[in-house]
Length: 151
Image 1 (cartoon, rainbow, N blue to C red):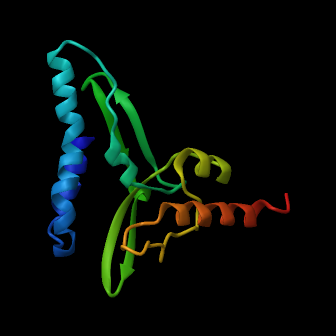
Image 2: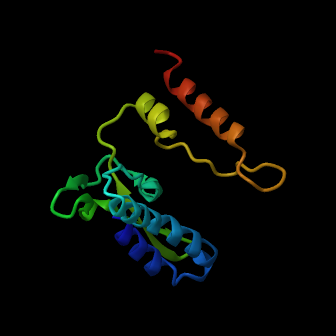
């Protein structure tokens, strides 16, 4: 999985607007491999976090499977045709890889994954240009309450 994520990073690194993200994402993609090598050299079988998988958006219909494969002693991500979502923005076609967290209610998505379907974070910035986490939490809470306040 980390190597396939690294490959995706290399492919999309050809886009000049992504240059400032390429090195940090490559390091994140390679980190689980390095940690696994270190753990194996010490003779331990520890769990390794796969943080890069969080960069794949959720699409309930995506035909993805993440499972442990003992033959490679690691997790394998299998992607089907419904995992690649294409979008046209400003005349440029872009694609993103989506995975499915399974059939989940909005309350599960909000509590376990920190998002709601259809709620974007466009326009949320603090005075210094960074993302304002309190505004994100407020927008998610208001959207959830708007959907379910009559229940």
